[in-house]
Image 1 (tube, one colour):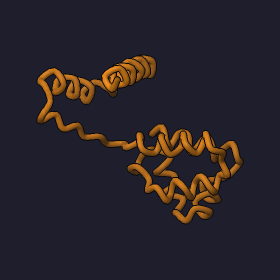
Image 2 (cartoon, rainbow, N blue to C red):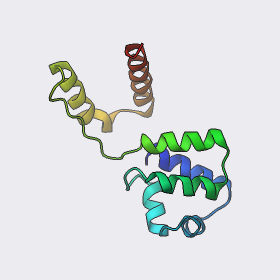
Image 3 (spheres, rainbow, N blue to C red):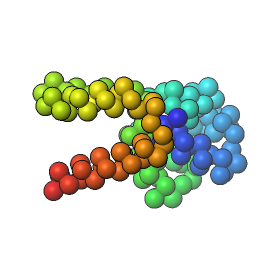
Image 4 (cartoon, rainbow, N blue to C red):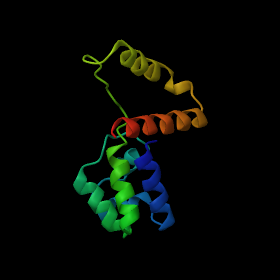
Length: 123
């Protein structure tokens, strides 16, 4: 499941909507909505995210969060390290080969540390 799919499912459930009801309201099939929630589809189109926001009648902060999560929820990611250092290539390969065995806590720790390092580099 992607972060977008997880949050979408949570928002839909909070409003007491079934997948079928929501799918009909936003103009997609229930199977597509299920695949989107379960991370079996790629990043949704911007217009679909807007339809979801309108359907769920969510406020600004939740709408911004949902749009951000949509952009960060590609279930398949490719990293081109051609122009990067050998250490960067090693890091990308290590992550690709080992992410499936990491605990949620370990993933969250790495995510926070990487996010902090990126922000520090941007200054």
